[in-house]
Image (cartoon, rainbow, N blue to C red; front, side):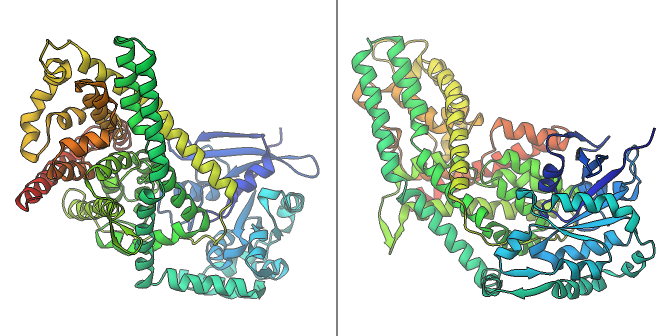
Length: 615
């Protein structure tokens, strides 16, 4: 029986290999992990013009065969025929980004050095043309000594020509041609520069303008100023733009609660709906506008190509605290949620670098903290202007996010000089092209994130809030006795309160911190439910949690509560993921311990200083 021929897709990350793989194989593919390695193996069947089937393998993106990560090690072993149970590919399909030739041709020379039958797929040629580049595939083919086929994977352009080239690749292989590529890395970079220039027939004004924009945005002095100014605008918008929508939602929840009170007879069901569901879950849902606005800016930054440039600007800061530049993307992901951020550390090759990133990821201000910040800021920080277009509330929110970033950097510096001691390693970053975000893509992204938030409100937050409401409602208080004092939850708060009272926390806060371990947003619903259950009349019970905090909390207590949530440990799900990624409880326990210590210390310092200043 004749063995089926194999072809492997190789190239730098973001060259479009996966899109090309999907276009060539369609539904004829299977996904698994390489044996003994947690790296995904995608294989599929490609049909040549003759009807011959070829097994096509989509290899992880690599910048070099000098493997720096598990992904690159798998690519190197498969291409060299060193992977047990994986035959050496008969044909290599080298995928390069047409708009980023100079960078991609460095690795291309390393591939061609193997002397294997190779086809170059000049991919995303449409985006290169859109960016004002006119390319000459024939000139590039002559320089490389292998066939070059222009492709647009997402539009299925050039696929037939590529399949025909694969069919003839082995007959055109030149065993001697590979000798010219035995070069040092500096020589490869210089050669790539010359070949890229020779293959570009012309550049439009647009391409020149984009390079000029990068010279400004990536400037080591001007770039960071622009980045932090943009972040400042984002946090101002989170309050200024969201306020009308949040007020409308809060009014709607209050109206619904009043309607239930008027139509449902007094008793268990009415209390369940008004005090448990509407006061608890409703108090979190009203912050959906802030979540949507924050993610709108994040999605625009990603889609426009600016997010990668922000990562480049942050690389110097990361290296200064002993982290690799590869740590930035996982930490950036943690602003949405620490769970995908911790999982993204798998791309970091250095074990101590990866561990440090996992340990500091919870300090990034995840979106679950936003409802907590928003309700406290709205309650105790005046809605005043401190400058043209600058609101005090937005300024405080910006300071809280900045405090999380600074805290993470300081902790990383300490860890890299103590328990995870080691040197930082460099990384290669590829700048995507600037492009105008598509309205449809933004709408889909916002809907997905809004749905995730609402689903959490309808599942985790709902469940925890109802459990807390039951613990607050039973046993029933005697006449003249506070329901909080009589309840199971109140007894639990009495145990915790002596520990937290020195840092300014009241009994309600002490109780709210327990369910907040399930999800950060639950702290808001827990406070709302607690105040609703303990209210003596329905008018007070119907008031929003923001109004209750404004009336009952001192400013030092509110500021201490904010400081606590800057550093407090993440939700249980995050801790579970950290345990899985570190293969044990040692480091998650360490993470919980140091985060609680920081939260207690900074909440205490904030309360004591604010009190001393007479706030």
